[in-house]
Image (cartoon, rainbow, N blue to C red; front, side, top):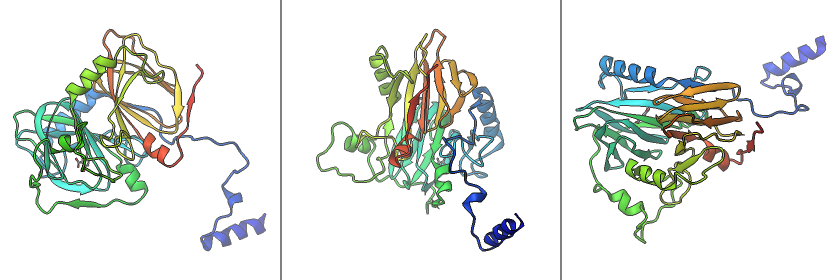
Length: 338
Ligand code: GTQ
C-alpha cells in the first residue's frame, strides 16, 4: 500500500495519472447531467429587467442583458447554451461587434427597432425570430418609440468550453448599411436567384416573421403533431432546410388544450420559454407549472413530458443543442415508459 501511494505521488509529480486511481471502466455508465431541471419565473425576470433599465445605461454596459444563469453552472443556462433577455429603449444603440458565438433573437415585447447584421438592416417586432450567425457583425438600433425586449440565445458556453472565444468590437459603433432592406429574403427565400451560392456551414442572417409563424401554426395546428412535443415548427436554415445554426436549433412549439405528450429523453438539452399560455412539464422527478414569460430547462438524458390543462393553446419558444450532438455522433433518444 505504502509502495502504491508513493508510486502514485511519483506519477502525480510527473503529470501522469494511473487509471486505477479514478476510472471505473468495468461499470455501466450513462449520462448524468451536472445541472438539474430548473425554472426561472417570468414575473421576476421582467421586474428585474425593468430595474436594470432604470439603473443601467448603455454607457456602462455593451448590452443590457440578464442571463438565466443555471446555479450549478459557471455560466449559461445549459452547459452549451445561454438564454438571455435584452432590453433596448427608444433612442438607444448597442454597438457593433462580432464573436465566435452564434446567436439568435426572439422578440418578446415591442416593435420598431432594427438589427443590423453584416450591413443589412432588419426591422423587428414581437414574435419575430432572427439569426446572427457566428462571426457576423451586429448592432442593435432603436429609433422607434417603443422599448423592445428580446431573448438572446448564444452558444457561448460551448465556445468557452472549447476555448475558441474570439470577440471583436467594430471599428465604428454603427455599421454602415451596405445591403438593401429585404436583400436576404430575396437571396435566400423560397424564390432563389440561381446564381446565389453558399457553401458556408453558417446560415445567412435571416428574419422569420411572427405573422408567418402564426399562420403556419393555424394551418397545421389540428394535425397529430409530434408525440413527444406536440406541434413543432423548426426555424430551419433557409438554404439547407437543416438546423437553425450548426450548434443549436430553435422552434415554436404548441401544446394544445387538453394535450399530454409522451415522455422521452435524449442527449440534447432543451430550454423552453413560455411565449403564450400556461401548462405543466414533468422533468426528471420534478413538476414545473409554468405561465407566460417563464423559462425552464430539461437537461440531457432527463425524461420529460408536457401537459396543457388550460383552455388556451400554450406556445413555447424552444432551443436545443441537438444539432451539435448529432453532428458529433452523440445523439441518442429513448421513449420513457410511463
Ligand atoms: O447581441 O451581441 O445577450 O454579445 C450577450 C452577448 C447578446 C449580442 C447577449 C452579446 C449579445
